[in-house]
Amino acid sequence: MNILACVSEGVFTNGPLPLAAAGRGNGNGRAALPVPNPCDELAVEAAVRLKERHGGRVTLVTVGSMSEATMGAYLGLGVDEGLQVLDEGLDSLGPVQVAWLLAQVIRPVAPDLVLCGERATGGPATGLVPIALAEFLSLPVVTEAAALEVGTDDVTVERLIERGDRQVLQAPWPAVVTVARAFRSPRYPALAKARRATRRRLSLAALGITRDELDRVTAGPQEVAREKARPRPKRIYVPPSTLSAAERMAALMAGGRKASARKEGDEKFLEGSPPEVAAKIIEFLKRERILEW
Image 1 (cartoon, rainbow, N blue to C red):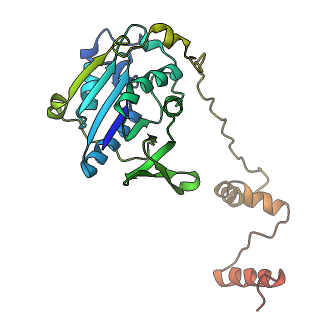
Image 2: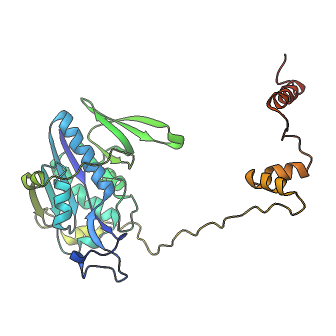
Image 3: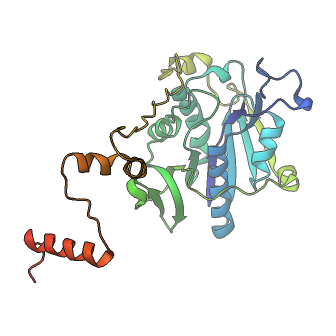
């Protein structure tokens, strides 16, 4: 089985800058280090698991520059070969251009399955690359796979949907599948596996692609701004001062519902011993003809 995983490089910016990374910060004392994209790690993990169960070969492909540490982390998961398309100006490509270039690399390989992460990190993160890639390759696409298995001529994908339900889809292969974050966590990379994997770098000229051809591909949506989510103000309930201390405490514990109900004469809140409350509930159900006995 020939499986191909598309990966990109993320950026770690959530921790203090290590001493070993001096000079690579983002100017505010935080780390800005190239790391594997967590979403793409899951795609590689899914590819390696399929290879372990069914045999075959896993090839990794990326467009643009990637640090040796990041490439080694991907290859250390159990990848057989890493393909890197590296040329001037490829780091500034839009998602549609990246998808078109990936398609030119993937088409001659003729994989049975193409796996991608949900989205990139450290950039626009539109999640458009896998969808556009499937369009350029004229292949079916299934998104957000929480589990997947392959048959003789199709792939079965289990997707997480609303309310925790799972949807099972089947698609004929070859197909493009994006792996969701609900997939199993990736294993730790092994240095020995990274050393055994072969690496190849391809230029645009080696692929027979001119820069004019790439420029004619629409760049797709571009991020022009990003705003942080505005926190919603929290409303704190304050019980009326006319209530007694016990009633105010009860109102606070009930979030104000009990006090408002009492004020409006609502009889939904019953008081008494458990048998008395149960008897009142049964009487109400009979009165409303919910119970016929």
